[in-house]
Amino acid sequence: MTTPGLDEGVRPKRVVVERRLHPVTPFRRAWAPVAVVVGWAAHDPNQAQEQLTRLTTTTLLIVFAVVVPAASLYGFLSWWFTHFSVTDSELRIRTGLLFRRTAHIRLERLQAVDLTQPLLARLAGVAKLRLDVVGADKKDELAFLGAAEARALRAELLARAAGFAPETAHEVGEAPARELLRVPARELAIALMLTGATWGALAAALVVPPVLWLATHSVWTVLATGLPLLGAAGASSAGRFVGEYDWTVGESPDGLRIDHGLLDRTHETVPPGRVQTVRIVEPLLWRRRGWVRVELDVAGSANSVLVPVAPRAAAEAVIARVLPGAEVPATATLSRPPRRAGRCLPLWWRGYGIAVTGAVFVARHGLLRRSVALVPHAKVQSVRLSQGPWKRLWRLADVHVDTGADKTVTARLRDAREAAELLRGQAERSRTGRRDAGPDQWMA
Image (tube, rainbow, N blue to C red; front, side, top):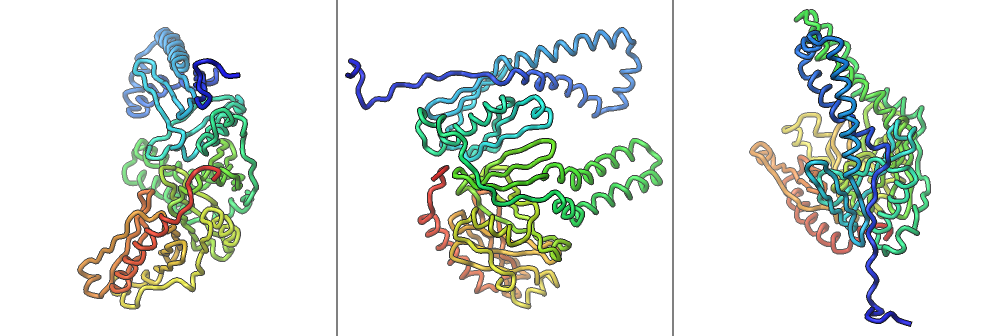
């Protein structure tokens, strides 16, 4: 039986329901006016101190009685006027109290949906969704949602981005994941202790403030310089340990999943087909233990670390899941520049090398801190050759490979004829690689 006036091939239009964020969101947004006052005080502490000394206790109580309700009202109204909805083709986010803003996020343009839970959010049972969209420099976010609602919405958005119909996307659920690698806390702590940046920042924090005190005898100068240095030292050691604690890499149909964090728990997804470059970093003090760090360049995404520290064999096994069919060439098989390259860059020229396989373009640089970059041929956007006067004198040239993540991998100090052949060959490999590349779609 058919309904009169309704064609059988026409699908009924789905009703779009607008939803609000979690009720704890106003408490988060109420901090904005307070942050403005704190920022002003930090910008000019002397004037702020003078202003505070002029205020009486009664005035302070009046200010407090005005600021707290005003901040609470701002948080409530900003939450009340924020809505989001999922339509047949896009995610809409409407925000703004005085100035309205509506974001229309095309679902097929979604390339990552990350779920994060800061410490207080975990205690409150809420989570934040951050959306990576192709071509967008800034991430849109939904903060905060109930933890269960956030996971369900994330699964629905990923299913919709994969091409599932709106009627069935919410039934797909979160794709199961298989664990590939987990970084032990002890191994991470030792790796950070063996990193030169940690000791460099700590040495600067301990040496610079006493020197400034002897030179200026100004407490403000010492504090203005010493506190940022101490913060940098903490960020390079304790901060990284807290952020990279319990780092887990899992494989699922919607890409590689990365879970990490001691206080703030983050659940990220490496979008399939969006990885432009994989970089294997090997600090000097890690070599004896055979450890490496794996970094990523992902188009339009802030995801930059795949593995913070792991044995080389385990790291290469994960890389094989990111770049199917690609193999990491051994260091001994990389082609070094000719010996005359030492006229342009004494000693350090030995740290450069290249290799070209059927799947990737490989370039290495560094003697103390080695870095090997792998670029899939299909992700190369352009290839350039540069040759300055001094390099031209010694018949040398550099070949630059540009990727879709606005990054460049360079094969430095190559023989000029080799560089010209590499330029032509890489242009052809990139063209055929893009033609034969598989789909970038989720769950393909």
